[in-house]
Length: 492
Length: 120
Image (cartoon, rainbow over all chains, first blue to last red):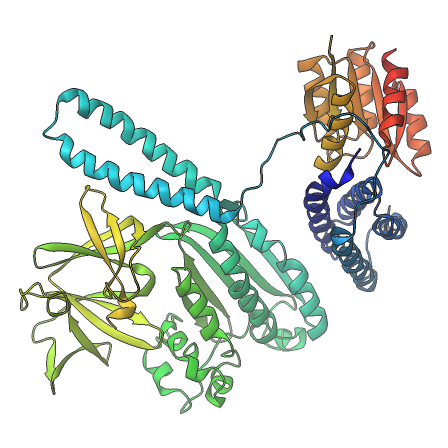
């Protein structure tokens, strides 16, 4: 039997068992020891059998030794943290051995003449690129279908009937297509307990991590992009947010700090909160006036402060450390989230804790966007770069030199009239603006009217870069109209 | 005529491996189970001629699953899949009603020998 055919399955199985093993070992640490030990034992046992079957003896031997170590835990009520340390260390070694075995040649099992049977096809592996191409094709079909729908009004009833049937099938196909790329949030949450435990031990802090919403599904590409920002925020919370036990006790808090990772559905996609009950972020007088200006101490909302501490220029500046001790790298988190089509915000109450809120779309193909009208046309602006929408008050915007500005909470923001940029020639009727943020740059994009939010399927333009500098793509609106997607990055 | 088999193991790797070996011996896989409880349920549904049963599984272990199946279907032919160092458990499984056992890591020839002994 040629075992090399099972290598991919071996990789998947060992990965799954190592994850399970890590989770079970963390459970030994103050959780249900009996359950954790039994679960760890099963995972180790399966790993051993699988490795032995593949002829990866080094892995099997290591798993066997760890299995022995685990068997001494049976029937115990508590396990010392140092024992858990040792077992986790053993797991790391095991993981390294598994990684090495994945590149090692596979031993030939007993020679079997005869033809190789087809492997049991319960799952198929698909290259992500091909899935992407398929998704693009489905999206394009949706666009064609909308054009057909527009023509169908004048066609025979039979055509309209068939088209309606096709509409249903295309909608189903689209949903299925998106589902293919979806994976549970738990995949990104899975590594966090270990990270938190190791960091807490290193810093000599007590931290309880709670995870919620791991079952929510999200586009794999977005999930992968979330890993780094989440890890960063989690490490920041343990390092800077949560206080050592002594400090907590002095503040009248329980000695164990609470860290919560919670994923929830929201209208724009998925919202993930990283919440700690630590010391919060308090501005120091005189060090960050910008931060203080937008901060409402009464309700603990500090999005304005986040804007300050997450600006690239502030990350390494001394002010940040003075403000919060946690500025480093937040700009990277915010930038990464924007690239995913998401956004970062923050709530903090000095002395009581900080919550970072990450919002991301569930899928890259479907985006939340703001629909606006300029002249006779409707356009959409992805929410990715939209900070807020504002209505112009009387006497606003105001002329300043050769340009115009509008005041948003005391800050003067440059106004860009889309009618002028787009050449629609109707200026003057603008009643509202979309406050767009690209990195540290901001501008108020003046429009005739704000129509509302819509979930849109963006079809990127396949044209030479620079030929259509204002637009990033086209989309079909829910009412069947096609609209151009404005690219704020080219306007701000 | 093809014989039928139910494969019970919590590891996909092991299930696939056993499927391959048994298909070569002209078995039809009528079901797979990942837990003891699932094994009992699937046995009732499919009444296979052979069961390959892992010892260590979540929710209900293989030995308890053997007891449950044999209590209801005394004619059940169950082959235990054990690992090195599980001799005592194997003895317990045989007492519970399993017909024979094989030891992981599996050698296809050994598996087929054991299957032959159990199915006759």
